[in-house]
Structure formats: structure tokens, C-alpha cells
Length: 315
Image (cartoon, rainbow, N blue to C red):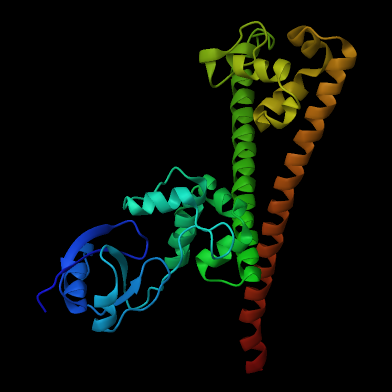
């Protein structure tokens, strides 16, 4: 067996790829384990990288052309295709070129969700560590292609995307709850400060109460960024924090007319929109708090029943 065959070997993610020259299939496994960081003697399966054909026969290995690319798989790993557009035949030209160069283009939106899907496939618990941008990328991924990448049926992939969307929704609710809590705490601090200095006019201190005083407009008491949103953005109420919404609503019609330089009709429309948005956010937080409260009461009732039952049985 003197003939030596030039070939390539990669791992199942295609992120590591090396060129080898080996005389046999067994030597390919030995050197492939070494280059890819597998443990010596670890069981591996050799497949063709392009279509997943299992290579077990030495004669078949020798018949393959030079520079054939192989993939080494661990015991629990399975071959999966690269990113495809039509379900099996037309490979993306760019991905093909990238793979031939033995690199992966992580800037590609398709490559990004595909690698996130592989990460989730290996460890479902990794969802906890994913950023909101990563979760949104998986939610927006084409469902049939996501199912193919995960090795799922399409219905299961749809359920996965619904679960990920639920995680995003819960994070948004937690953020709004945190904003509301911060608003309550700041209001309490402001009230304490006013009680400590009762003779100080409230209007004179309005611009000094802001926590982020670096970019506060002294005349209006609003942050410069908040004024820019109010004056220059479409639907500004959706872009403001809960604290800013509370401040706008509290100021009232006349004060906001002076701050914005608008007529009463336009100012009134803005105040109504801000009041509606603030009410919606508060209702969401109250709904979550109500659910938690009922859950806690149910647990306490069950706990009391569990304590009383043995006593009744002893009588």
C-alpha cells in the first residue's frame, strides 16, 4: 500500500478542516483524530462531506478522486448538509466557495442562524445564554430550513420557534417590570427630598430631579434625547421609557405646550397617546403581578391543607 492519497478532513460543523496525505482509510481516521482534536482510539465514522455517504471499505476509499473531502463524526454526531436554498440540490454558491476555503462566513445571516441551531441541537440549555438578537435570529429563520438543520419535523421546528418567541416576550415583560420598579423607587426618593426641603418651589427643582443630569435641558427638565424623540419621531410614545412617559403625563397640557412649542390639538393628541401607552404597560405589569400573587396564594393554601390533613387523620 505505497500509494498515498491527498484528501481533506473536517469535523461535523465544518469549522475545522485540514489537508492530509494518507495511504489508507485507517490512516485517515488516525490522522483525522489527531488534527481535529479527537481522543486517540476514539470511535469515529468517516463520511463524504458533500452528501454524507459512509465510507467503510478500503477499496472504495482508494477509488475516490484526489482531494476528496471527508467528515469525521463522533459516536452521537450525524451528518447534516450545508446551507441549502431548495431542499436538496442547489447549494449556495457563496457557501460552497467558503467551505472549499475551509472557513465559515459568520457574517452571513443564513450561516448565523444555522450555527445557532447547531448549538441549540447539541445543548438545549444554551438557550439561557443566548442574547435577544440570537433568539430573534432563530425565530426569523425559515421554518423548513431550521427543521432540516435541527433534524426535526417541520411541526416541531414551529413549536421551537414559538417557545423562543415566548422567551423573548418574558424578557420584555421583565424589562418593563424593572422600569416600573425603578420609576416607583425614584418617585419615592423625589417625595422624600420634597419633604426634607418644603420651602423649595417644586417648579425650580423640576429640572434637577433627573437622574441622568448630564444631558438635561434646564428649561424643560427633560433629557435632550427625550425632547428629540418627542419632536422628531413617529409614534414617540412607543420609543420612550416608562419613566419618560410618566413625566410627560404628569406635566400636563399647558406645560407640554410650552416645552414642545405646539398648538393645543397636537399636544393633546400626544398626551393621549402617552397616557394610553403608559396604561397598557402598567396593565401588563399588574397582570403579571396578579398571576404571581394568585400562584403564591394557591401554594400557601396547598401547604396549609397538607399540614391539616395528617392532624384530621389522627382523630
